Image (cartoon, rainbow, N blue to C red; front, side, top):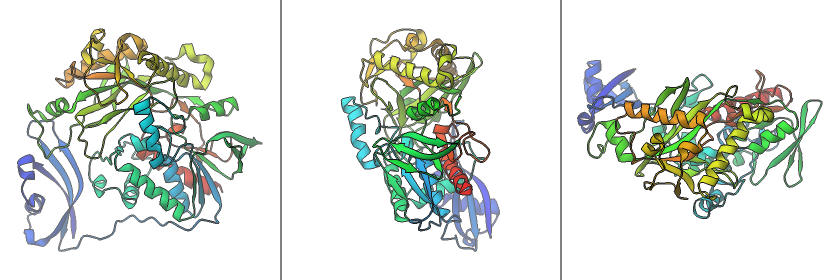
Length: 518
């Protein structure tokens, strides 16, 4: 017999051996000797009050063994000589599309503009130390996509888009810790993701799939509204049956190519802002109601904030406790910031994007001449402003938080995790009013919700501009493009995902749709 129950444990109890067994026996009113095992299904922290509670959802096995195998299995088939599906991009959407194709007996041919995850590291070092951006190998492009070096956060609200548990179990199958199956806000860590991604690559190759790195798609051959072939930068033309377009939200050349060929695109609302960085100790003290260091049983504290300002949402995005701010530009001449954390989240800083909702129908009147790419043009301009304000390198413009709210240039800046360095700049006047004025009011609101958050011990760093795609590539109910037969827009680049898990689910769905079409 197996029973699922909820248990609440405080920090004093958490230190006791076999506390879950003891609480389970009390809750079920049975003898401890009758319980074979207590398996944790979910764990979360309730820190709303000073007495912090750990909430557990557990499966109690009564005179019954715990199953040795997961309910999920992944039946990969030999596909060396099978019918082909071409996948452009090898981020979460592209990886999961390739794996699903193999399960369905089709051969994935992956075309990735960047390098494999090991070689990619050299180009990241060049950005951080030498301020040189390799346009096809950076924090956004390369094996694993942007997800590889953006923390590995797996929390998603996209529960209706697919089987979230299946995505997690597949990550565990490829080497992730089983802890991601338990934590309410699961996270792998930037230091551990590369090995998992390499395992996925090896599995795809093992069963006959192909992965071509340093392979950039530069054109599509279309006849009678059907995609017939794709052209590569090296001059090669590849005949195709079905193409899953999983290029991510930063592949601007793909949007521009589709726009140039008059293939339907839509401008899409998105969000932009800055990244704020506090000493982790400040966030811990606010969230855990402590005046000293947090209890060793507690992880680095996170937060989630939202404030309505002038009928627009100002909110935290991609919060990285114990993390780093990284340079996420995909071309020289722009500055973009993002955040990531190692698996232990043990860095001394906490950072988060703080962004403002932008309305594609109201906020971009000056950019109407760009049509469906108007949001992209706005995004580019803001990144160029940040580049010039930072000194025309990957040094980022920054300001102390209270100085930003008060409209005052910071005479000095706090220590930072951002390796290329910071330069004091008047972000309060550099940011467009639709963003800057709302951010200033939003930070005041956040300070009222989290006392101690609004402090000059924090820096804000610009700009956080790649939250999601400013372009949508429309598709029909069968996930095929509305005009081009054989083209399946996918993941964040198509405007259909917002993170690792939702992109992976969309990758699987597009693989299933492409296979059904064939």
